[in-house]
Image 1 (cartoon, rainbow, N blue to C red):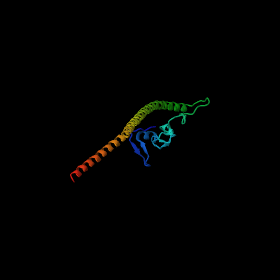
Image 2: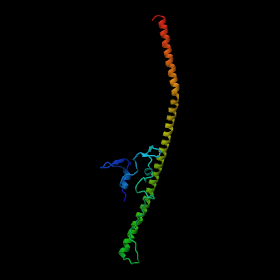
Image 3: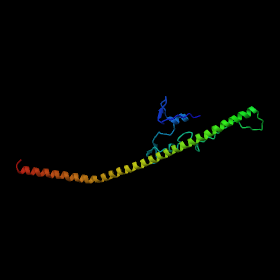
Image 4: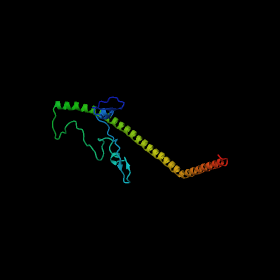
Length: 189
């Protein structure tokens, strides 16, 4: 049975220093297991990147069904009656009471699973929206770096002109100094 208390979902730190999410931790007894490590991987071209396919395609939680991880367990509240038999009054009454309890629990379970599906759908919406945001930020960063690279190329292209201007100014400075010295010498200074 879940005992859910309202939470602000702020991370909490356990006694061993592990961080867990509030509500999810209370419901499911553990932290979320999305991989956050980002080690470099050598690419075929000799560069490194953090796009390890095993991390990119890893389940967001170890218990999520996938082709490599499936759980086919079921629920059976009473044992299967494998051969015909008679039931006594006490057994029949007990089964009737259990059937009523299971009906109530089944309705509650349907409501709970409907809520869990809704929550997971909302989590997925936030997840995909965040990934689209990250993708846009990454594309914008490349655009900014392309603009920086273009400016750098333009500035490097101007270096010869700057060198020529520097040479012209230096030559003009030398010519002016020579002219001034010539005037001083003509006056005997």
